[in-house]
Length: 77
Image (tube, rainbow, N blue to C red; front, side, top):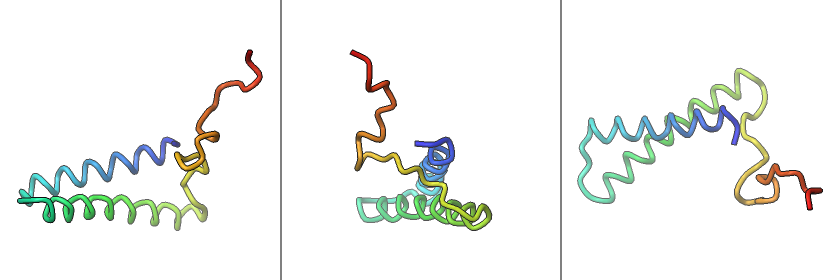
């Protein structure tokens, strides 16, 4: 994960936390709505950043391809 991806992840978490404090959700459905709203805020920020940069800020390394996450020297014995 890149620093940009970490920052966007933190923005989603902080946004969801602040929305939760403000809305005081009751039950799973309301809590889910707050969480989705926090993620949407970070998603909008990512899209705007990408629009300004002209390219994606997402790294090709992700948990779907664990080999890309391993940055250790493969030639060590």
